[in-house]
Image (cartoon, rainbow, N blue to C red; front, top):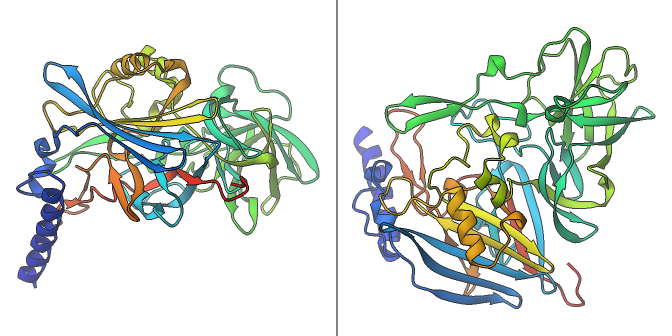
Length: 435
């Protein structure tokens, strides 16, 4: 039986090598890619392809000095001809599965919870704000930039972590827990906690180098005898409802969509089963939001180190002064642009770019770093598109699925990439200009 399993694993590796060789990556051993990714340090030729009216994909190599380089994939969208949307899913998906049935092209989304412990995951993995198919499913703990489609119009704006909700015949104000640290609590105001309050920890691992998880015992709202927590869980059929009540706090941050904290005795009608209706968020009518997610800092802010809202819930900051693959989004008028700066971490010359290099390259391309924003980078950086009716992918082709036990191999998963919880989709407007 063991011999048969080894044959299956070997056959899978051989099939993966065939795919890589056909794409020009001369890898000799899939398992060795966990230690050495030099086969992916291949420069791309300069190319331009019109994927559809108003949708253009460009590829080029950008030299960084001392032999280092990054491959740049730029997707430019004319919003008069292309409809842009954000899709999110709690159970996750692979980017190329969206092509071509859902979209002409898709780009990996924004920051979500990532852990190597499959047994303990949040009910809502999108960190901070997420609006799914017209429903605000999670509230922000901190004011951050967000990509929104509001009344059918895409925009990028700073979304304040504050708003109102309706419950049990009464309207309540709410504010993000990380905003609370900057001011005193107002009477009757609710405080929002969520998965973005978690703290990722790193431990050494002999095969993968490190493993990420959270301490489940400590992953809860702060205890406070003067407050009561209300765990709120969203479902497509029932919307938001209070699913449990916790006097004194200490509520598991991953157990529901978010937690509403109130001073004990100020919310007598909030009890298990109470329906919650989000009415306003960051000054916007929540009922007019089509979709959206919190995104990363502007390129300017990341280069300047203004990234405090993105710390503990992402573990090691992706905005440190190190080279890594990065994904950007920018919106200027009716032109929406995505850029992927590709790289593989276990190479000498092809690791990606630093935040400072990102700002410099944006400025050199005539883009204002204050109006271009980071999306999830690293192994998540990927674009998928349709070419001659076939789904294609670019970015993070070095990606390996890590083994969860000592007797399992690494699996090459470069075409699928990391399991995502959000993505941007782009499709042609339907006849008559409808989206």
